[in-house]
Length: 173
Image 1 (cartoon, helix red, strand yellow):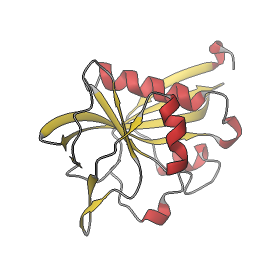
Image 2 (cartoon, rainbow, N blue to C red; image 1 turned 180 degrees about the vertical axis):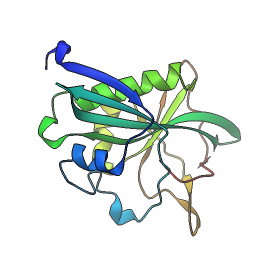
Image 3 (cartoon, helix red, strand yellow; image 1 turned 45 degrees about the vertical axis):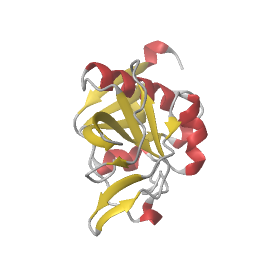
Image 4 (cartoon, rainbow, N blue to C red; image 1 turned 90 degrees about the vertical axis):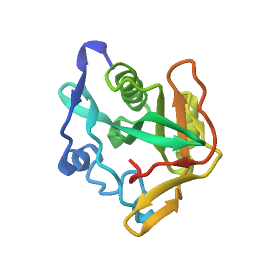
C-alpha cells in the first residue's frame, strides 16, 4: 500500500449495494444474521479507497445511552468491513482510526461503543477497545433484550467508561 494510492472519504450515504460490493458478494459479512437483530442505520460513513476502489468501511451514529446512572453520548461504531482480498493490509485499522477521529472532532463524543462477534474482540482490543462487562440492554421490535453479542467501548479522552448496566434505548448499531 502506497500512501498516494489511498483516499479517505467521509460520506452520509452507503447503500446495501455498496456493502455487498465491498463484502465481495457476501450478504452477511459480519455473520450476525443468525442473531435476528434489528440494527439502527449509521448516519456517517468512513470509506478507505485504494486506487479509487473501496477497500474498507466503518459506519457511525451519534447516540445517547445510559451507563449506570449517567447519560453519556457515544459514537456508535458499526458495519466495520474490509474487502476480503484486502484483509490483513491494515485497511480496517485505518478505517477505525479515521472513525474514532471523526467521532471526537465532528460528533464531539468522548466515547465509542460497538457490538461484535466474540471472535473479533481480540482485534478490537488491539485497537484499544475494552469489553463492557456489565449487562447491555438493547431495543428490538419485540421489546428490550440483553445484547446477545459482546459490546465494547473506548474512551477517546481522559474520562473513564462510567460502568454500570448500559441501556441503549434504541436499536443497536
